[in-house]
Length: 438
Image (tube, rainbow, N blue to C red; front, side):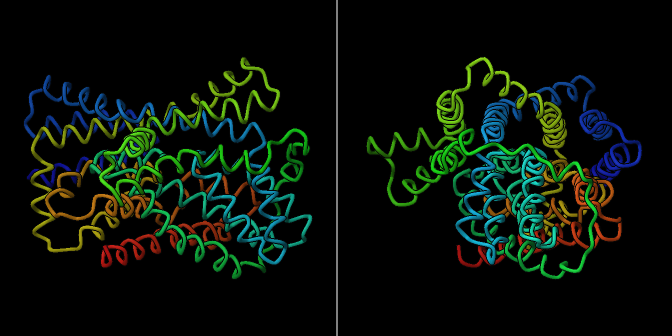
């Protein structure tokens, strides 16, 4: 009966978000109350579980996501994203422009939230396509596939970070494995798939062909831009390398472990970027702080959605239903990585939001991860990959892509939706291959 109640709860969540258009945070809280009461919990115990779930989830993630939003805003406003794009295109040349934009999307996508990266980089794609006379989708899709992968697979993005926390996964290893899985996924969904779309005639709005382009003097250097954008990855990666090849008990090892903690890595990166992308570029501290405040405002609703998912997860745990689901899933004898991917995929197609799909899946299968002995890092990646499957009309990313590129619905399904599906399936295949070798 417990499994039936959870299935009805997930179905109610889908209806509230996709059909009733209710705010996702409110939908999570309502469903959490309903599931807890239906499972026989005392009403006050359900409320306490919701508060505990929200507190445990946000206690870790507020720091990561808040600092990440600040860093992303600094990278965008300083012109570092523009510098990275222009320099990589110059390095790789016209023949390899897709690879250049793919790398741009990946580098900029690591510290920057998807919607921000999209709005910042797409106008640059339009300008480049006009200058090179290359088809717009051929130029743009590699960059967007990379942005999508970083959003779905990799910390410090909201869903992967929250899922890693729930599963007890090591953030550094998750990023390391994520890079390995991401490379073939982006190559197939971006440069290879976009070659099939060269014949598409698109009609983007004229205003997007006139983006605000900073002058050479206004932008930071390429070294500064890359260092500032990737500093969290460098710190976490160095810490992970130390733990892989030593006990990390030396003074250097302990220092790197401290600096490689995700919270400290993001804090250090923000403080460094305030200097390298702000004060050093001649900006006033008051303007820098105002920009960072705007960046934090942009993630308010994401934080609330994550909080709601944390509430549902805690209700499932305290009611005992998570243990029941874990036993049922273990009894199915199916590959746990595939199960995580499949559950996230179904929720993604129904709800639209990759973040909601990933976090809802996490709430359902968290006890299952420990019971199976599956790699928690690979489970994070499998869940993240599933949360990207077949974006369509219930996903805001679908409409952003359609309107910015001036596509018909049919063209958007044949380009964007297929690209997202390729990213998802390739992610699953990559995780399954890694599981064999690890």
